[in-house]
Length: 180
Image (cartoon, rainbow, N blue to C red; front, side, top):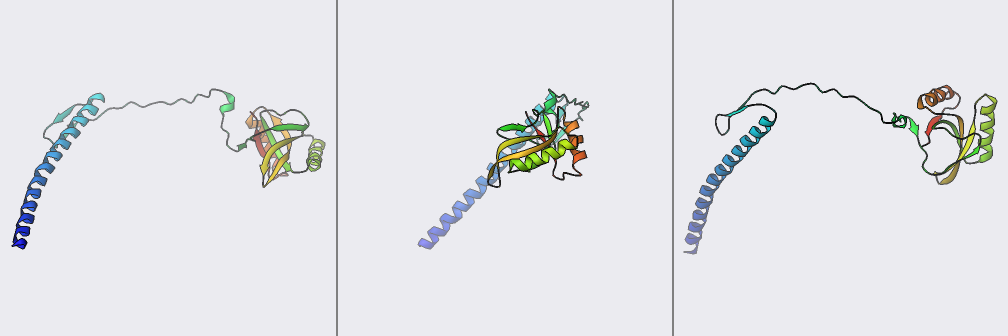
């Protein structure tokens, strides 16, 4: 008796669920299609197109005409130029030997020992460069306080890059430093 009652209850529940599911699903589908049609009508009205609704699921649109956009690049200041290939040093930088730094400098050597940096600086000066030595408080490979040898310093990046390209034959690791 319990088996028959359980079977009948299960059958009745399945019938009730399957009939509700299809009617709710179609109601949801209709609401979704109506919302999409309204959304398309609003979007197309703002773009200047006309929408004609033929059926709940069929929407006909007229093509949208667009005009080309021109983009003009404006640089606010010269320091906002392309900084590709340029490094900066975070922290304190102190000129130990030589003239003050300009915006862009060509670094040709980095030393932990000031005497070695001074030797490289003197070699560059003998070759006609306005070399200088700076001390930084950077920590690299566990050592803090590096002496950088600068061969030349410029106001423009282009001049510094040109100088670096000339020096890179003799100083393979030459790079451009930017000081704010």
